[in-house]
Each structure stands twice: as C-alpha cells, then as structure tokens.
Image (cartoon, rainbow, N blue to C red; front, side, top):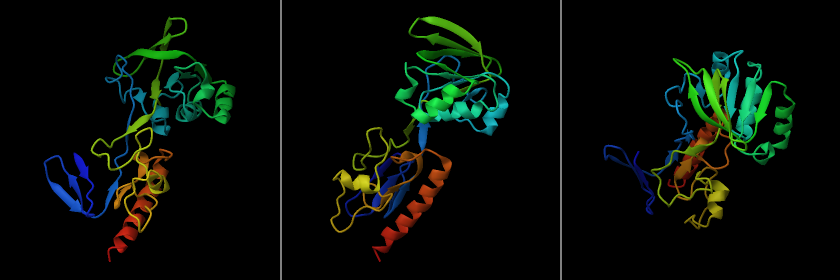
Length: 246
C-alpha cells in the first residue's frame, strides 16, 4: 500500500504499489511497527546470527550459558534481561543514560539490580560487533570516561523502541506524540472527528470507517496477545459501523 485516502463520502480508497485503487467503506490498519536500530559496524551482517530484537525461548537457547548483552533502558529491556538471566550467567544491560530509573519502572529496576546475573552498564554504548559466522565479541565505550572495552558475547538483544509502519497515511488520521494512531476516545478528544451523530468506535481513527489494531495503534502494550485481541475487536467495530449503513 502506498496511500490511504480518507473520503468525506465514506467510500475510502486504498492505493496499491501497482497503482490499483480499491474503494471500501471500512479499513483496518494493522501494519505493525519497525524496530529502531543502531548504526553499529557489523550489526546488519549478523542480524539473526547473534543479533536479535526479541528475547523468547528460541533466541535464549541459541546463546545458552554464554554472556549476552541487552541494549536499552526501558521496561522491555529490563524484562528481557530478567528473562535471559534464566539461561545465561552473565547478562549485561547496556544503558546510554546515567540513571536506570528515568525510563524503567521502579519495581522492575529493583528486580534488575537485585539479580546477581545482571550487570548494569550506565553511560555505555555499543560501538561495533564482530564474529563469523555468528556473533563473538562486542565493542563498548563508557561515554563518561571514554574508556573502551571488548567483551565476549553470545547475543545482542536490542530494545530501543519501534516506529509504526504508517508512512502511507495522510494528515486526516491523527497520531500521538510518538507517531502512533489515535483511536476511540483519544481520537474524539482531538476534535478532528467530523461526525456529530456518533462518536468513534473503540478502535476507530479520526477518519470514520477506518480502524487501527495492534502495535501501530497508540497506547498498546506491543505484545502478540494484545494485537490478537485488537484484531478481533476491530472486526467487531467494523460490523457495528457497517450496520449503521443498513
């Protein structure tokens, strides 16, 4: 999809890559997010071979009993570090800032600091990685002192946020301060909702008949189970709105 055109007559248009235009009364946007990445030497070459954006049992077992590095300072990074500590004796949490409490909940911060397998590296950044055919070492720099170090690593887990894949949307559909699509009550609160006879449904955007579900939507937990529930609710909202046309 290259463009979504919200029309005032309720018959919206979706423009495909080949120029095909599909007209429809309702649309569900479920395009997800693209993970933020780092401009680090060797990262692209070793993606999937020691460089990951998720920390499930699959990735964890690939680097079992080897030191690993988690890049990030938010709750997702903290949760990943806690989970990985079940498989690795040494988990380094690489934090660019000088205070873990700035971006991580206090409860999780306490658990991370109390875990003897997790080492928090404040004011530290990843500069390069190396290995063939899989990750072997990471190059770190402590920005406060300029000190550089090379450490063995069996896995780098990057948790520095994500951006919604919604480049094809115009200004008609409002987003929050981070670029995620506003729906429901929050969509109505923008005063961009054009109808006076009804409020937007739970997952309806500021464009009547257009809905958003999953990670691209504002205020979601960015978890698979949440996205599945969102999808089911979006379909219910679609049926509800289509019923108004009957």
